[in-house]
Image (cartoon, rainbow, N blue to C red; front, side, top):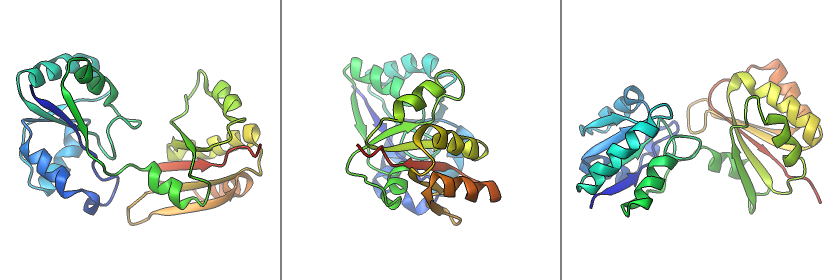
Length: 224
């Protein structure tokens, strides 16, 4: 029986790649990559030449069976995403679930994920938090915000730069404009930035300044 390795990759700075991750990627029989072009740049940088196969949200239902069969035949397989830890707002859950169901060992390496440094550097309580990832863009979005308005734990969201301002305004409507929050972008990259303050202050800031890069929003929970 083979094995599935879930391997985090850097969210920005390539120096965040671990020695162990490099070794595993060099040793496995197959690397499942969210985007083979993006991952190809990373693998070339670390002189990793193993076989690579596309595995993303549009084809993962079709590829899972073949992956399981290859692992059953004794092959070792690594799963990577474009950045961060697979399965965290990225493809990964389905293949992990099916490997577990089929008795195939799954090992997830520790490594980069965007929300952890954003949460820790926010200055908001991080002993208890809830990870929401990307909110629904349309159906169910308002319902979810109404539910989260009563959430006491610190909340973690992912958002795209072109939707950030709209999302902050909606947070102000549902959570209250004085709720404290932070917006981190370009984590571990050259232009990394974290802006902290009330939702009112953040809305004013990003009304004047268009955000760029990957975004993590941290919002304090309701004070009960």
